Amino acid sequence: QVQLVESGGGLVQAGGSLRLSCAASGRTFYTMGWFRQPPGKERDFVTAIRTDGSPVYADSVKGRFTVSRDYAKNTVYLQMNSLKPEDTAVYYCAAGGAWTIRRSDYDYWGRGTQVTVSS
Image 1 (cartoon, one colour):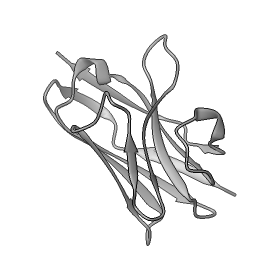
Image 2 (tube, helix red, strand yellow; image 1 turned 180 degrees about the horizontal axis):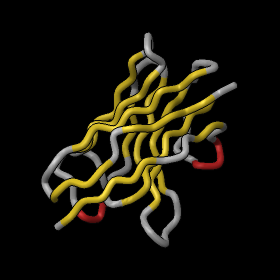
Image 3 (spheres, helix red, strand yellow; image 1 turned 45 degrees about the horizontal axis):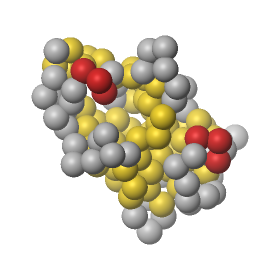
Image 4 (tube, rainbow, N blue to C red; image 1 turned 60 degrees about the horizontal axis):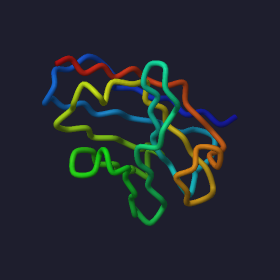
């Protein structure tokens, strides 16, 4: 049974940092990524990383967020620095077999973790 379990969310002041983790079980994936859903809005792409370590980022987080993978632990991380109030959202881990930023192309999803950035 495939599971993605996120952790590391919380409340932080603007300018602060948080590190999210997503542990996958059941199988390995070509692509693992992060999406986020602010209150009352759609779930949008944040970042993804494929098996060769190549990342892709949404423009809104470039230079502030860093995605990485630990293949031995089958875990993906999201280091978030210089956080802004507009980063407030539920962050979801996603995984799949395609190299894509499209939400519909991801096969598996975690339950999400809340990140709140206060001003």
